[in-house]
Length: 93
Image (cartoon, rainbow, N blue to C red; front, side, top):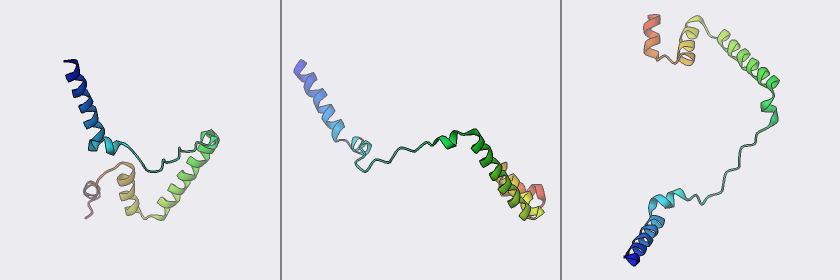
């Protein structure tokens, strides 16, 4: 009984090691470097400046669009409406 259990467990382990699933789990390529975390990203003042720069760029872009383009852009990009829903709301094709 003991020999039978040892042999069956051994065969099962060998089958698992040779399986395609196990071969897919082993990565043989070059390892990717870990991301570098800089302390400047943790500085609250730099985050505020970055957010203000993005806000300013967003306002400049909205200023360059005409009224209809703004009416379509904001619900689509900010509120995630579909184009068909926006067209119905604006009575446009």
